[in-house]
Image 1 (cartoon, rainbow, N blue to C red):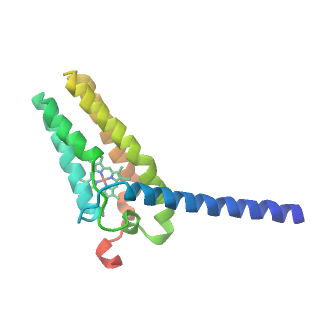
Image 2 (cartoon, rainbow, N blue to C red):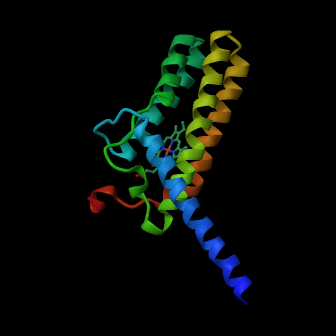
Image 3 (cartoon, protein in one colour):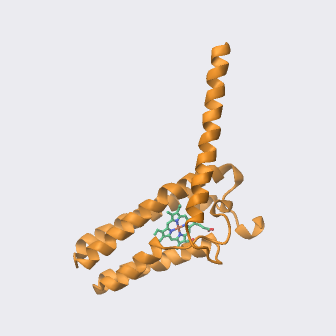
Length: 154
Ligand code: HEC
């Protein structure tokens, strides 16, 4: 019985450590970005503009236009509020982990588009853009319906 209690205590501790670690990492992610006076939603509108620029650069066969769109994705600012406030408190830990997991994936996938566009390998650049879009869509599928109006939270 005592043994079981100990195991349980360790599990609870690990969960707590995990939660703290996730928070710290999401905090660090946000702290590492330049803050802009925009909401998370407005930041996403910028992502939409970025993907439009990337696509336009691909059809025009213009590596610079692709690069500019890619840089918008990679160097996007942090919003003027903690990003996880857009979801209900019960979902915030999970959303923090999602942010931390997705950020580097978006960056490397976006970079791949610019690199292939620079080589004028438009088919490869197009597949890379499609991969990036798949990542955007994956996050939207999981989260877009779980958002709360940020204005009500401030
Ligand atoms: C970490 C998860 C996540 C990732 C990754 C992500 N988004 Fe979003 N996106 C969201 C959420 C959540 C919303 C809804 C925000 C709101 O309504 O407050 C959203 C909303 C949007 C909107 C506004 C949609 C609408 O309903 O009008 C656009 C445009 C958008 N995202 C583009 C993108 C693009 C392009 C990418 C990839 C380059 C991307 N997003 C990657 C989570 C994500």
